[in-house]
Image (cartoon, rainbow, N blue to C red; front, top):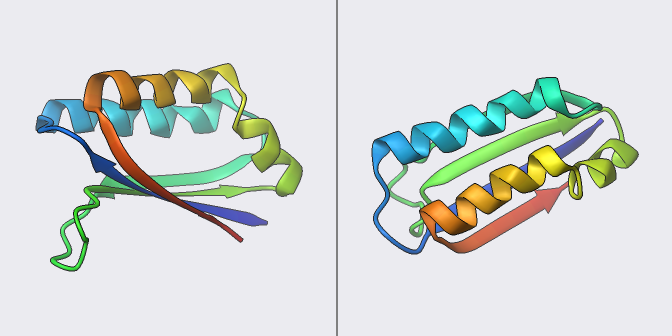
Length: 96
C-alpha cells in the first residue's frame, strides 16, 4: 500500500464553498480512478500550519496505482480547479 499526502496553500482568499467544492471533487476520485483504497481531505485548523489550508491523504493499492493517478483525466480536472479557481500558491507532496 502507498500513502500519498498533499498539503495545499492558496494564493488568494477562497470561500468555504470553494473549499467544499475542492473536497467534494477530490473525494469523488475514489469512484473514478482505479487503485484508490481511500481518500481523506479537509481544512487545516492547526496553528502550526505555516499557511497550508487544506490537507489530503490518499491510500493506493500499489505504486503503479499512484503512477496512474497523476495523469488521469479526472485527477487533472481537480488540479485544474485548484489552480484556476482557487489559486494554488504552494503544495507539498509526500509519498511513502
